[in-house]
Length: 202
Ligand SMILES: Cc1cc2nc3c(=O)[nH]c(=O)nc-3n(C[C@H](O)[C@H](O)[C@H](O)COP(=O)(O)O)c2cc1C
Image (cartoon, rainbow, N blue to C red; front, top):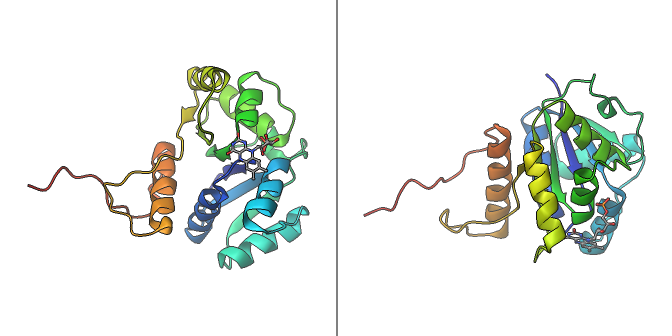
């Protein structure tokens, strides 16, 4: 099975990425994970957790934190541009960036691949493989919106973390699950059961 590339950048809503990772590894998907430099900062300031930089230590950290014993996870440093996933010759199932900052959106839209996340997104577009972007910012400025259109036109799917209330969520966890499952709907994978809209009950 080819891996799914999950990239986490330094936007708010890291919990969505964490839950996605937990569901994927729990279902034995193979995951290649990259955190941007900004993501480590957000984990530190929003969640009060210092994620290890070293790929092996980080793999241990995630497996312990997510309570998945045998997940097929490979962690990469954001600046490791010689990683397997930096090349189009390495096969993947596709890539999801969640949450995705406006900085990362802008750099991918302009083809300015500074780090492994941006390079890998560039590769997914050129190889015409699925690239799902979950941009998190509010409000968007004109530059953000134009960059999102550029990426959409280049083949990416834009799937922002926007909640819905028709599933009658009872907790933040319900809401996060909704966002994660809809994200993977866009990727073509049914990650977990979800109360879906089935028309109004008369
Ligand atoms: C606590 C915190 C929350 C942030 N939230 C966002 C956000 O929601 N969206 C965004 O575009 N940038 C956000 N930023 C700013 C980015 O982290 C910053 O622009 C960073 O350089 C992005 O780098 P990256 O795209 O490589 O992760 C946040 C920063 C911090 C410290």
